[in-house]
Amino acid sequence: MPTVVLMDASLSMTRPVSLEQCSEELQRKNLAVAGLTMLFEHMANNYRLEFTSLVAFSSLWELLVPFTRDYNTLQEALNNLEDYDKTCLESALHGVSNVVQQEWGHACPTQVVLVTDGSLGIGKGSLRHSLQTLKGRPEDKKFPLPFPFPAKLFIMCIANAEELQMTDTMHNLEQLLQLNGGDGQIFTMEGQLCLKSVQSMFGRLIDEVYSPFPAVLRCGNLASDVQVFPRPEPVFLDEEIDPMPRHILTDLEIVGFIEIGDISSPPVMSRHLVLPIAVNKEVDDVGPGTTEEPEEETSANQQAGKIPNFCVLLHGSLKVEGMVALVQLGPEWYGMLYSQADSKKKSNLMMSLFEPGPEPLPWLGKVSQLGPISDAAENPYGEDDSKSPFPLQPKIKRSYAQNVTVWIKASGLQTDVQKILRNARKLPEKTQTFYKELNRLRKAALAFGFWELLKGVAELLERECTLLPDTAHPDAAFQLSHAAKQLKLASTGDSQYAAFDQNINPMHTDFSGGGAGM
Image 1 (tube, rainbow, N blue to C red):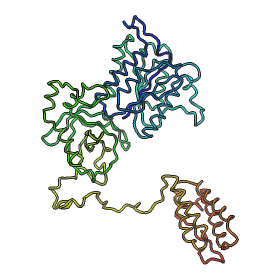
Image 2 (image 1 turned 30 degrees about the vertical axis):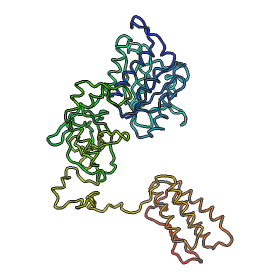
Image 3 (image 1 turned 90 degrees about the vertical axis):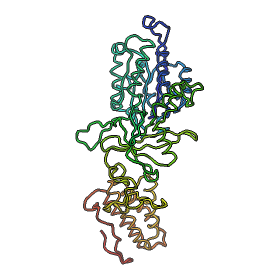
């Protein structure tokens, strides 16, 4: 889950902290940098595979560091951050939306960490002005929240709650969270403004959002203590009347192994890094942005590296054999463990979570009914691995196992319309083909309620009729006019002409021997 750090670089962040509250001469900006440094160090040690971006804002926004795993680069940009002018949070949120969509699209869940002193700005462009003018905006000037992608917004205030509640700042920040669907949280400093309190505030963020998930990975008599990054979110099932959150168990039981080719690229809810705790301890001493082992290992780390670890064995085995491990996450809830290459020399043990249910992947059937090859009367893969028992064939032929018109992209619709026009220009020789394609498009448009399409195609046919050359067969004009008229009638939605099971039949003329009209 990528993270965007949105750092306030306005002049209000340069306000000095009272010497009564802090023994050193510090600005609020210095406290914010100290807190983010703590966050970056934690992520460098524990979230090495996650991408983080740094955006600064005042009246304008600037992408300082695009999404990266190099926390040294992030730290350097943070240390060199300049001071700018007034606060304009709305434009900054637009910037976050652009940055995330360009890199990840609309489907990737994202964490947005906003670091600010709670100053909302003045006049036009301030957060107060933005929230007061939410209604009645044109489409191209809408407020950027909610984000067009799944996102959680965490607001880190370099101020204590008492200071924020003296004005309407806290109320406005709470409105921001509500506009984003309520996903997120506001963090404030406790007590005096000093390094200790800002570290405590960012520590709470780390504990709640960026803490690993400890678990035990088991396979038969083998087991290994592991940590899962990022922490898996609770899942709510839409089909339940009163949905309750479902959490994965801390005991992850491997129930079997299957070839990568059989499981293919299944739909998953989320992906997570799995690290053995002993190996993870060796990396804790490594600096931000690096994944190499330190030059001088302690005797404890050397001893940990000599202890056999099932997680390391599993990772190497899956990588060499080209297989995945099916793991049970809870009652009727499964996932898979697999090796994923991070670079030419590095790979990681990953865990993907399937949708809860006994049959998350239909082509495998029910997971509880899968068994070892040795239980089968004959090898389902053949003696030379020349076949596969998957995908399972459904016992009942689906009613939708027939050609259905679907327009996923505009190019598909354009192709169907052009096919009708090509046949229209070859009338009357292509009369049957013309009406076949016309009725196929008509049925699809009626099914989708796409009345405008019917009217548009009717106008195209009328235009084709006016463009017929003098040498054209007389029947062509009659058929085009007839088809255009029937499409226009269907576009009105009148049940007499828009019945789905009716077809437009060729018009009977003295020049053709077809049937009657509709």
